[in-house]
Length: 113
Length: 113
Image (cartoon, rainbow over all chains, first blue to last red):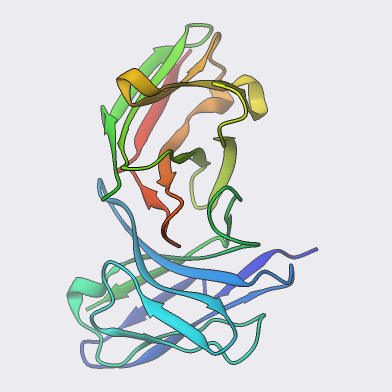
């Protein structure tokens, strides 16, 4: 059982480039999330999805886009990379919100130069 | 609105000593509360969760936390620290009205031999 899988693990982008961070889960969870983690700031929610075809903004959505065409996949798109997007990105999923735990991927460390 | 405050960005204890990591929350409704642990270069893993069944919650690896409504606290404790407990710990809150779990800024635990 793979859980939540993120690719790539590391990436360096130049300012203005675009990329997609991939996330897939094999637990048939309806809820999926993208967080960014910056030192001393905890995790900030970028986007989330409550099911295929349904996405919504989190706390820090600017500069990002998402899609959810299947239950399993929830890619995060950066269109015009900026240095402020240098961070560690985590994808997570849960069976439902509220009292259920979230399962996290191992993260993608992104540097924009 | 919900919020989580973790007191102390860094805590250092000696091996065998008591571990106490502090978490205070703000929520307008009875919350669901979580503690997650993050080992270096990994995603977050659930340690324990409070869902109103019992105020003292036992988790994995000997950790426990007590929900104190009057103090709006959910502090994490472990009687005897082990070197393998060195990690970053996150307190999180989720209320019944939303789909978003809010994470604290994290506390990094150092364990000295």
